[in-house]
Length: 228
Image 1 (spheres, one colour):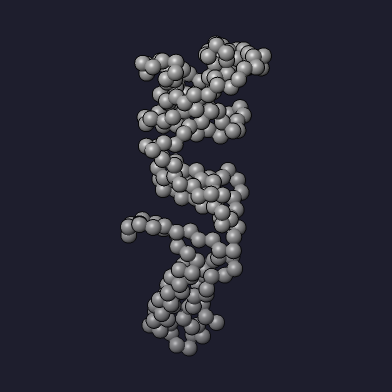
Image 2 (cartoon, rainbow, N blue to C red; image 1 turned 180 degrees about the vertical axis):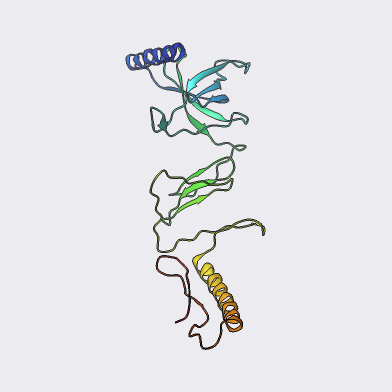
């Protein structure tokens, strides 16, 4: 552990002991976010009741509902816009602050989550939504990626994968019904060409007919066999 990390841990232990020993009324104010450090999940906040010149900021931890060593829930606030921060004062001396969360304003509007639903929407519009109709929705407006080191499974009565707004040079994944129709058309064209080829090249009386295509088997393979 580095000297800086050791000093920080020591300070946090002392602050925690002071919070436990000093039973003071909770004093909350609303400040303005100035910066955010993702490495230790702390924020610099301007507190107008302390410094009306808007020049002094206070570094404080940002509260999160779930955490552990190297994991947890962490949302990065955007310090490039004006965000209101709810701050709790945990010390009678007024120098021990904790950022509890943020407030939506007329300029920083919410995404509009309806009652009984839970949404997470990022700065690019990508979202993850639990809706009251029992569905779970995800929209990778800025792109999406799902990766697993081992087994992955999607189970549902109907599963669809699709792509929109692609040009002719790009790849897409189509629905099973569309894929089946495309394969059936391809089989028909190939069968016709094979029959024409066989009529021109196979000698009569050899006992061999033109080759035929079989449909997709249960294992998903497609084979070409000579007619018996």
